Image (cartoon, one colour):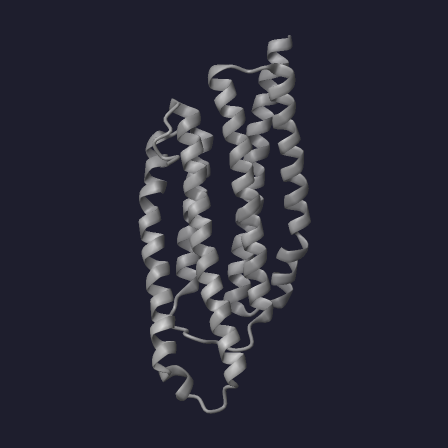
Length: 226
């Protein structure tokens, strides 16, 4: 009976981690929608919902601590609990980045460098998160490696976006083309766009972290951790 109860706790932990990932992914999608549509209502919904993500994260953190302290797991169970503990931290940080994106949507005054496809980058980063969580749920090592390999693509997209912005900013071509644009507002919006690109790249990095912890959980393989 005790063993059945322990296994139930492990199953519930996995279900709760997956629920947190779904909630975080939803918040990122809402933030991307808010950026694309200039939807302040949706952006505020993301910001106001951050406390729910934090609450679930803290509850899961305590669940992991209790399992480690009270059940004294070994081998694969120990790796599962410690990996889950690390993964929820990455998910909570992705939630924070979603909040950042939502705030950028509220703060943006003007569209600048519309050729930078923020939605494309954001969707690619979010797809990495979804794939990493699929690997966690199905214990699929190939998916773990696939997520890590896709990180180069996200980095390339983000680097190209940042270079486009900085190169054109240094040339002054975009600003000179619009005499009605206030210089201070323009620079603030450029900074906001660069921060948006940076935060999307970080979401991809957190997805790789999830994949790395999952690979360690499955096979005791730490090759993606370094």
